[in-house]
Amino acid sequence: MNRENVFNQLKIDEGVVHEIYLDHLGYATFGVGHLVLESDPEHGQPVGTPVSGERVRECFDHDLDLAISECKHLYGDVTWAKFPGEVQEILVNMMFNMGRTRLSKFKKMNAHLVQKEWESAAIEGRDSLWYRQVTNRAERLMKRLEMV
Image (cartoon, rainbow, N blue to C red; front, side):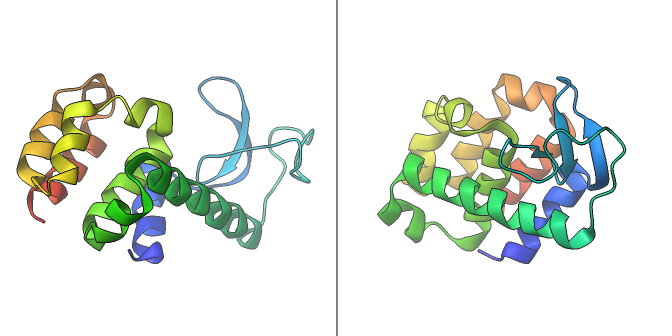
């Protein structure tokens, strides 16, 4: 998996904001969809507080590591390691967007992934509420999955 590819993909899908803002649920956020944590130095800072590009990248790298770890937990280390890099990038993007709880509910898609049935997995990915909610992003990811 190419981390820089994932960073560039997620900048498009999530956007990148170099200041603290409130997300659609009202939570303080910055960078590439980074939720401000109590442990972050930005915690408690007002909306509009600038955040450096270096800090945005630092938080993104941490969040990416977490998304990869969650994928390994969901699919198992051995299975994850056998997925082509392109499939890993797609799943990390989905994990970043949904989290493990929601991605784990894609039972049929996940079963096809384990069997390396990429086209069937894409069909199942399209048959979801997630797909209807983020159609452009989801279709782009499912098209990539079909091409593996």
